[in-house]
Image (tube, rainbow, N blue to C red; front, side):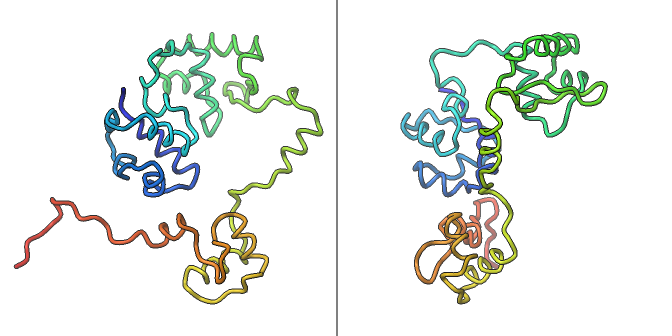
Length: 228
């Protein structure tokens, strides 16, 4: 078994708004195994714990612990590397920027871009788009779903949207232990979003309560000082 991909864990925790302590409690491991800078060997954990950790983070177990799958995947070709880079890049990238980021020759990047452009299915369900004269990016293809399906998908509410002023005020009052109207629209919306409990009076959910009050920081042996 390989070493846990702590970089990927950090990304997924941030994307899902989760804390290492919450996930560690669910999986039954120590939070340091999710937060330390260097990869930790998880070979002593049962496969069920690794699978549960991957499920909580919504990633493939083999991505979490490279080498977990006894059948190693073949090395990625330039086309896959370019698609992966463009899919994760926050802005369009030029050929030279792609080559530098992927550490492959610019000619390989140019060939990969040509192949993607000639075969739209290679990036499905995304499409390669040119931005300006030299940069590229990936955007969703518009020919895979109907116009009605597109409108319904776009109409799905964003559960990660920022809080409204009323929601923020209600959340602040609950966190501060102040009374709130339990049946107010803001409180109901916070409960539906999983930020407040359904009890009366409402309280912050477990994850939010931990984020607001993480407790005393751990003191390592090197930080301890003798009393004089």
